[in-house]
Image (cartoon, rainbow, N blue to C red):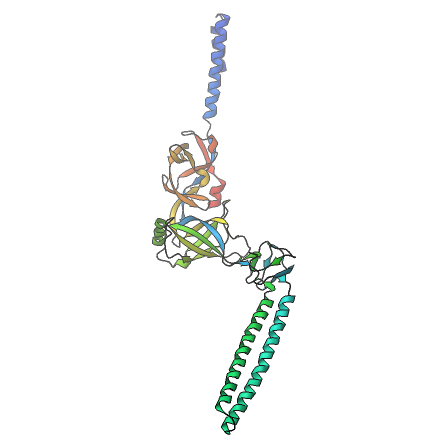
Length: 384
């Protein structure tokens, strides 16, 4: 190039200065074009992954919600002055843990009154029993009358009835006294208290606090009638309680425990045309929270061979989804049809075949027909 420029300069040295300036500009453009062409002809380094098949389990995703197996709204069953709140809000508690204490004085007095009435009726019953026995002995000796015996029998039965009534009143008084100690009916995590010490509480005070069980948890999700029939057909050979149930959180992370379906509703919700399905899933570390919105992933037990590529390989434009493959050391566009996700990969239904080299690294510099220098990507090494 330099030699040619020197020859041209000698031949055209006689030209006017304006023509020389135009000639110099033209030569500069030609030089830049030649440099640009030389750069473009250099192969673009890219990382590739060889398309391969994997054992893919059939799966379906639904929007679901976490529900506690046990949920209790704690209420006061007797009216009285609240003496103590015995728990720390948010703690995990056991069944029978004391929660609240109501002033006992009035209820202890009611128990003593009921005990006194029961003792009086017991004494009256003993007396009536003695009188009945005596009247029967006198009647047997023909020293008494049948009328006296009948009156003694009626008095004895009345005394017995009063004793039973007083026994019931005593039982109720003792039960009300026991209600002054409010304990947790289930094990779980306790919420905030809605009342504090010094307030008068009673059956009309509303919910004092709420307790939800933690392990296991329920996951409830609606399934459309069409999806339900599809799910039933795909899993017809395995029992319902053996369908694997996974959870995907809103940030895309996967829960590390699997559950099983334990209930399918007996009717279709007419307002939504869906069937409610419920699964039970372990929650040993308390990761799942009652009311949490999640995605439910159902997996069958029949894995199939599917072509998969990393998600990083997929691109999209107005024409749809495509990938770049290496063909004869050049980048070539392939339109593909995806059939869902599998872990970190995408299942490819059409457009690729096993062994195709798909570009996953260096895509920003790749254009159709551009020469490329392919090397295995980190993902390709990890897949081996």
